[in-house]
Image 1 (cartoon, rainbow, N blue to C red):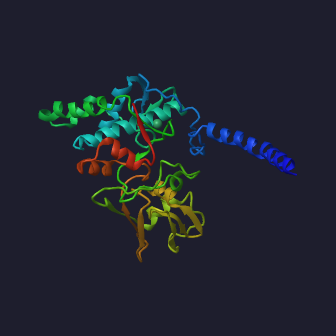
Image 2 (tube, helix red, strand yellow):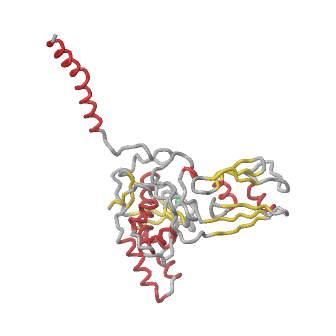
Length: 327
Ligand SMILES: [Zn+2]
């Protein structure tokens, strides 16, 4: 009987414990960092082993010329176009790293997409770009060399630095002013959650408010292609719901339900963080807070953080959740 019990437990050991040892081994050997968190509209499969390129081809939209630039000279031109030179040094450095990352992402995932050029200088398409000559013409003569040195240092001191999430280069969206809270990317371009583009505190010290009014005829003209069967003399406009950051998500105009992001494009208001009022004479007024889509880094918030003593790395890690900065 004793022999039988020993044989029985030995048999059980072989049947259950040994296969489990193999299973544990397999789990331990599994790669810890490869996830598909970034799928949806963002293709991350080509982002591994990214290197900072030497050159970039830029389309100048005013003349339709394509010019080839040294990569960091291009980044200097983006800084001229995108942020005031009066910004704090650490905010300029954060913008340089973000602009470099944003450009590298486009080069990897969508190269030569502009008539053979990699990027264009249109702020509404890629990133704004301005030349050194443009900067010197707009700066006070006595300060231009000092300002250029400040801008150049922001780019050279961050040379080859870019942002990754799980080892893969990120889609580094940025905007002018969050109005207090940045936006989760899913509310702006749809698709799935992107773990590093969550809603976080904007850190600006003001709300950047704007009031914009339209007569009933102006408003009807702007929305006519989207809102069908719309009677400009008799309609209701109602906000249906808000996003997690407090921006308007959907609203109803007449019989049509539309996204606030779509309305923003149609009528040219600064942000989807608004309230709306309709007067008796049909004039419609939007009161907006912040400026831009609200996703990723707030440029104004970055400057406020720099004023409070945060470094460019801390600023970037605040606006892009869970990222690393590579050299
Ligand atoms: Zn473009």
